[in-house]
Length: 388
Image (cartoon, rainbow, N blue to C red; front, top):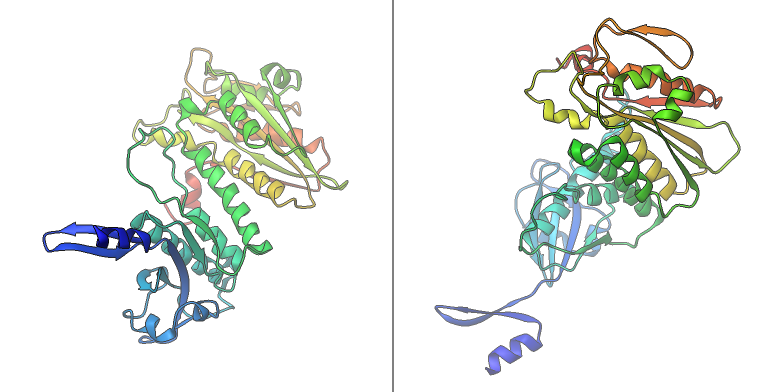
């Protein structure tokens, strides 16, 4: 009993085994530290890492870590996740794709470390993360890796790690920037993964209104079918005609200056069967994500507002389902868009351009400085880019 009491008082976890009683130190703290590959046999810690673990302890922990890989070592009262950042190359940029490969290496490596610690050590209470020279990228990796969609799953009675994740050198502005960027991306991921019966046009609008309810500088208007008809959006309404779910047109405004707005337009088909030109059944469940463009522009707005960016943004999202109901548009039908132009529909599975046509016409009425549209428009895009 004395040994048991002594172990509890000192913060030890007491275990009983066949060989008697033994105590193991409870580890409540985790740290993610980046390491660069110096050569095929050597690696070096970041400047922040050198202040938290001796270089010889890190180097003796095992072979050189590959980029994105992780190894956990115990150092004092801390579980240290060493993560591979690859070679030091601050000029690692892909100009053709406008990607900063150094940032991507940090995001990937940090994500590996945070994920490993949270999944393997559920008793951790805090995880401190090395900024790795770029706190924003480090924060993005830290929070992007924690996303999962389990809202509709039965809750299991298993312990999950509730550790608080923060920057090891203090949560600076760059860290918060990365957090809010990850927040917007994770919201978009949640929207895209939500089953279509839980994200109809009406439910999408309700979810977005709730997500932005804390921001008083965002004006949200949810326009209904009668408004779209009054605006002459026959192209948009022709897509929704075959569905029992009423269409919605979401208009969100965030104005922090008096310049002409930048307008983001997102395709919001919350489920796409193809209409009368129906798709093959295999893989059709993935068409719950045919509102990917809408999710992207919604997430972008959430990040911009959270960061209080000095912008004038307007987000326009036509929301509907493309279903083969008795009132559905038929191949050969002619519909009229908002600008008065008539469109003959040859294939009802080319619905994205029909709803975007009216959304873009509406965008033009605001005399924008720029219009960016995002859409899961056609699988043929992969073929056009050489991936088909």
